[in-house]
Image (cartoon, rainbow, N blue to C red):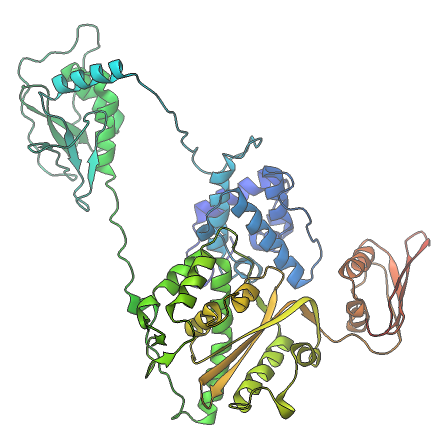
Length: 574
């Protein structure tokens, strides 16, 4: 049994049936691969699962152990099942599984996939969870509808409806087979609880139909639901459900007793509605709970307190960015709560000591909200922290702080590529977004989203770019604009390439040492790196001859002594 995330309850029954379902579809035992968490952690089996349900859903699956590529497998799995119909709210985030933060959320996602898979064309199972109901539409001509209306009038004694009221929240359930429209003077249903005394008036001048069996005797157990109703102009009757009795049993007994078997389905529906009244809608969170007022200035903080706050703030900003990336449309609802804080071009964020002037006013916020709710914006995978990018982002924040009022000039001027290059090598794509004025996570990400004065919303588009997989955060007090924050983004990040010629080796089936991996990571081609690692795992010894200005030569020797060479060339400075 895997552990759940902190504060998360992992339902043992749901976990057991989910694991059995995965094993039935993909084959093999998860326990033999280290258990639920370890077997699914690299995303390979999850991608195999979704590709079995819908072939081709995940085109390329990484089978190595490099962390950010493993996280990419999990993001691809989430994207595939979201496209199949799994609600965004049901998706786990890659760290939930990769870092074991919330295995309950992983099980919830898989349970949701099990339900959705039942409707995937061509997938015959096995299925997970209860069978989904299917819609059956019936069309009646006017003559049939009129005949039905006349029959319903005779059944209800001229009244048009029987109303069922559940006592839990006072929510009304209409038995549509018993009624057609609401009216005054309706008969009201009463729901009793176990042990509650009830009275059942005797029916007058009613007998069971001659061609039906005699009704079973009423149980002696307490009545848990009683629904008063009337047939025509006759006496008031009581449809009762006893403890231990099913709605089907109770409806059958009543229908046989009173000769109305053609109404059994409607009676059963009324009982089920009374047992399970509609839940009361959750109250909307007040705006002040969504956007709490925070301490604003830093004038009374010591340097040590400022440093402690900066260290605490960085992971919270990254978590808030990931919240935006995981549910853009949901984040639009959060931003919408800021609309009342605008008055013309003036903006007074929650807790701010005074309003500040903006370029566009509320128009920039509304444009960001519309963009996040657009059909082209999809959830993307979570960003993970890269320490080297954290250092580069802090340099950027310091540049903003120390060049206040001067812009990026003199010694403080640099560019993102140079700054990041001091700490390592970025991959695929590099970007950076910044925010001023606020010193709490929600406010920082809101500033990034709003992009006041930029109709293209470049920062918002950048932070939602699916190629970005790692990030770093830098922040600190600003002398004139309260606070400065920078988020540096990249597709991947690793150590600086080796800048000298080097020859390294790795024995067949061995574990590459750090010196070997430094050279291999210096090769600017992910596929080449993965091929070498696969060959070592497959039983080949590898000899690498690396020249930073020319390329790399790889000699692979298999168990039979056969030698295969891989060469990759590049020009100095590439």
